Image 1 (cartoon, rainbow, N blue to C red):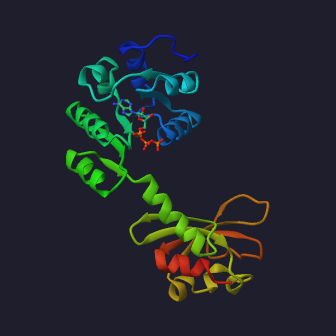
Image 2 (image 1 turned 120 degrees about the horizontal axis):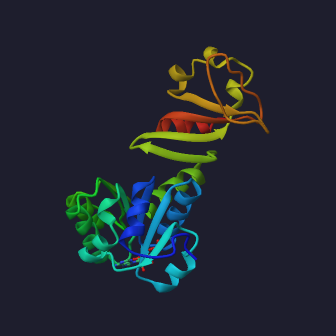
Image 3 (image 1 turned 90 degrees about the horizontal axis):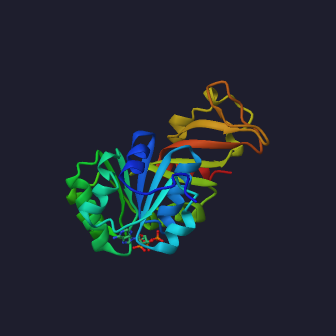
Length: 232
Ligand code: ATP
């Protein structure tokens, strides 16, 4: 059972007033995103055409509604126009994704996020004025490629050509205060944070001395950060 016992504009309006997000399309991507938002304390209105999906998420999200998001009147009735942030997580049915985004744009939603399955889909969404177009498959594929290639434990390219890499600490800089390693000059990177085995993450500074078994967060141009993570 949903925590909000009845569907419709009034309930959605109440959700929209809080720290809230509407997620349209509750497939693997949309439902994972919606559940993560809820676990972080955000109220989530989930919308999907599929009755079984709606049933399965009933009680997990703040409210879940079975509805066709391509119809203006339907979204209006759900008070979607009162949300500041809406995520469109429809991929396979590109026309449904585009129609939904176009309705949301006509409602002047301040921030729309939408998933694209490929570059052409993404381009149309961008041309529609969607504020954030995301490419989950492409981005995850690229990210995993970096993990497969190197010693990185995690890799995020925060902007084209600039990355954050989690890796073991190379032996070349162990036992020396970071301020004496000339890291930026030699390797073009910065160590932002570290943790000793069993410890918690701590910001690094010039006096930090890293040891065998430590894990570090390296920030810098992708090539440099990745190259540094591969040092032994
Ligand atoms: P995923 O990879 O996240 O599982 P997908 O990329 O395969 O999803 P789709 O299957 O097209 O994407 O869409 C995801 C969800 O969006 C599905 O659960 C589908 O029922 C829902 N959906 C599609 N069209 C509409 C619509 N017009 N209104 C509401 N929900 C929709």
